[in-house]
Image (cartoon, rainbow, N blue to C red; front, side, top):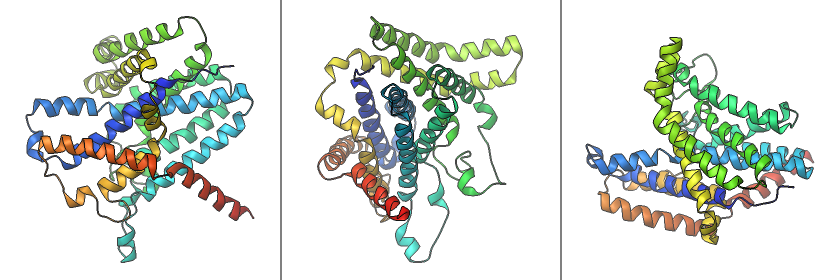
Length: 361
């Protein structure tokens, strides 16, 4: 039975959530003039762009790893039910964080709270993973191949839905597919990163106990990662010249998805390489408290529920040094609250289960 804990996963999750916190803080509060023709800002912006792909990929990896592992333990059905429940919970929290309660109390309603953000996208992705795993009759090899193919198809066809606008279906559903109405994340292409994470999880599941697996995996991550970053655009351009297919040309000229996937694999390799040095309780705890941290940071920055957050109070007024020191203080404060005062996961799980039990009775 595969029982070895993958500590680097929690470390990557910690890295991703901390990058997200500082990214949101600086992007929300930095004065606009410091963003123009600024090399430092451009470098920061590039590395900030790795955050979301990392978070989605690692979410797909850890969720799918536990799912396929549950089959060997004999409790796959329980894990699938738990996955669907968690997916629905994330979707619910995602919407709740954008509800302007005070405005609603005054009778002012709008549709902005229906925009889709990272939590809704990940929540729906987890439900889709469960559905696909069930569809493959819990056969890990079939699930693995299907995840890889799905990821490739979603990424390669991105030009076809890049500017998608859907007007003939309810806004609630169209927001999952189109950014036309303000959605931050849509299920495509972001489910593609979940798929690649799920595919990677099956490799760990099947080969983790083999000799030199870690060395081979780190090497593979680095080779594929650097290949995607520096060679994937050239590859698609060659495919365009060979097959004369406009789709490959469009992918090659706006190839952010595969390049970012390459960035993610390089990060995986580096964290897996130094895994024995990052098994620190603080790092692992941050990686395990990502939901609490996300909720708390969203309330503080964007003023969820109250309408009063740093965005409304301070706005884009900070100088670079103020933004840097403010981000450090912000990260520290949010993590402290999450560790010692917030019980987001336990609170939500227990109360939602109580509600379900009440409805059933």
